[in-house]
Image 1 (cartoon, rainbow, N blue to C red):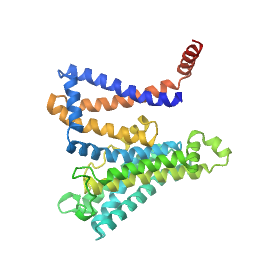
Image 2: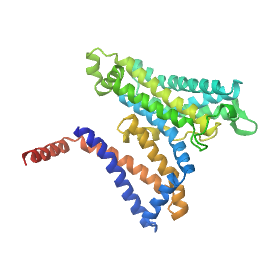
Image 3: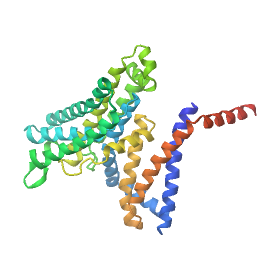
Image 4: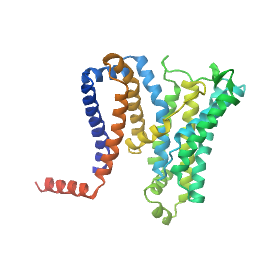
Length: 349
């Protein structure tokens, strides 16, 4: 119970401290921090249109955050969420623009194909880790560059649309429908459902328990008869499938075509959100929405107060730094001993 309370308290304090530092920066720049924060909130939630934009920006971050969360629960580090996201989008783009299929059938096919492509791409570092003992972090990071360069070949050569270095747009009949006429699409609903399914699998099924047991102590899990290698490979494939599903959903819901710079930074953002969310699927979703609020609202903040959008980036970075530092601090033996002494004193009184 105490550990759960600390795990919730640390991110909340980190967010508060990040905003305090952000307000100091705003004051130094000559702006009123309270007016700036009000403009930030208005930019993210001031109207239904703004809410739709915020949720649309949060959707790809939710998918990549869930991708990292699932792999980390098994004790492996999948830092290739961006590459798996891109591969899913590339496969989706090919099917949507070249298969001749349109409508619901094409949408379902694109989603399934994107998830399969992302899972197969993530299986590469998984197989190399299991059978060759390679470092999955390095391999998955390098595969991000491979996926980005491969996407470049696709939109500049194989699927190029005329003289412009981009692909043809997804047909209108294959685009995901918008919710209530806003910018947010059914991709957001798909992201929420994915998070709920992951939560149920991890915490309410025997396989999920075994996967978490492998993540907590692989050696102990192996001695207890768990198929550790199989769970490691499965965690890579499933996490990659989550990212690939996100790539295909984002392409059909928001982006519609492959262009230069697409999905840049999504993977590492997802890793940060999973860590801030304590590797909990539902908390990761909330953190992704919080980051989307900062990114969407910062534009209105800049227009209203003159505070540059980079201040929002500073707040995001500080949230990550404070959270990681706080979690490291609470795991120190000295901190645990101090908490134990305080608890004993209260019980004595």
